[in-house]
Structures are given as C-alpha cells and as structure tokens.
Image 1 (cartoon, rainbow, N blue to C red):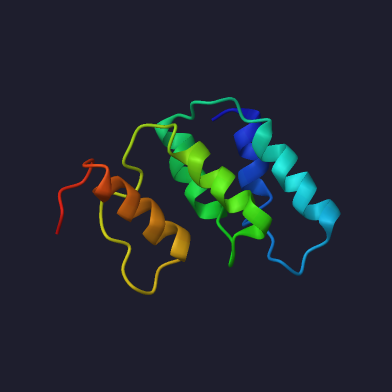
Image 2: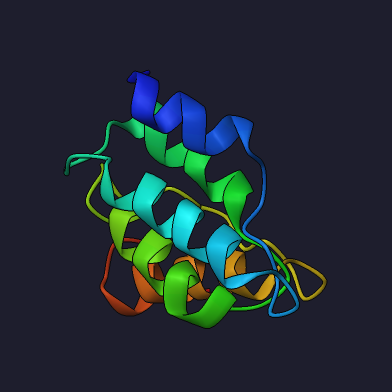
Length: 102
C-alpha cells in the first residue's frame, strides 16, 4: 500500500460537520495526494475511512477515489444498519451492473 494511502487510513474516519475548517482541509489535501487509480487493497482500506456525514463533500471525493480501483469493493449487501457510504458504494456497483441485482 502506498504511503499516501497509509497516512490517510491511519488518520481514521473523515471528520463530521462539527470539525474545524483546518481539519477538513487537511483530510481533503491528504485525499488529493493519492494518485488514481487505487489498488484493490487500497480501496478496501479506504472504505473504512467514511465518517458519519459527507464532511462538506469530502466523502464524495473519497467515494470516487475508491471507485477508481477494481470494482466492486463491496460485493455483498452491507445491510440496513451499515454506514450510508457503504450502502451507496454497494448500490452504485449494483446499479452499474458490477453486482447482480438481489
């Protein structure tokens, strides 16, 4: 796994809307430092980095980065109690024909 991905993953989930502008900017800059496409291993690690909300749009950047890797990252339904971003990744893969409809 590349150092940029390791650093991003090591910092944990994205912050929520209550975080400082500096923290959100720092995480966004970390994310932008990751050159696309990501590997399958990197994509799976990045899935753990979604936070409780969209982090001022940074979660969308993370989702799009994950989707540059081998798809689908989530091949099974994460379930109704899963993070909304995990559900979104799964549904996008299913709607894109990468996973058979249930």
